[in-house]
Image 1: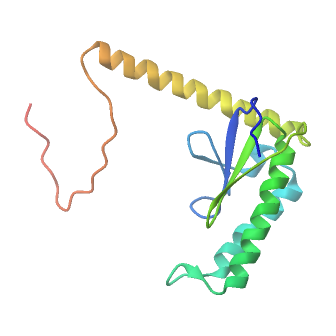
Image 2: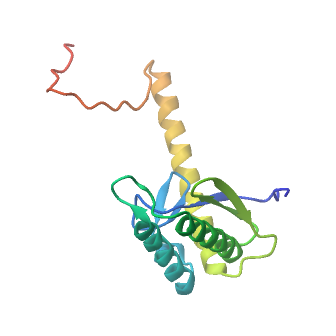
Image 3: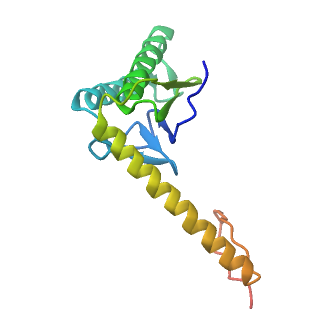
Amino acid sequence: MTEPEDLTGVVRLFPDYASSTLWFADQIPLEYVDAEITSGLAGRLDRWEESYYAGLDPMVHDWYSEDLEREFEAEGRKLAQALAEELGREFRVQLITGQKQMFHSTAPAKNPKAAAAFRAFQRDAEERDRERERFREHLQAEGSSFGWTIYAPLKPVDPPEA
């Protein structure tokens, strides 16, 4: 399947990790109400996520049965396509479950409010990207650099001496 050229963003759809199965741009989870998706689709997404937790053995984080996993995957594909149709041809929906699958619609958005919300999310993400780039350029002009460092010390660490 060829991808349309006028795509502005990829919406990721996966359960776990947040109060929503929708993720966009800077990997920000989106509340369904903010995404302006229909209440019917939001309810289906909630039930789909509930089936994820109900179908997994919490001790080994594996499915209780292959049938539950297949049902979950099948419903995920239906939801990804439904979301793609609500958002229209401007967006792709990436379903992330056992594997990554991409969905999109070639038609205009069935839910123009949702498409407009995602266009606004995209503009906000692009502005954050521009701001980060300006900050990085400012630091480079001063001879500094920028990066993120994460550490979890086992004991308190004294700050380096100046």
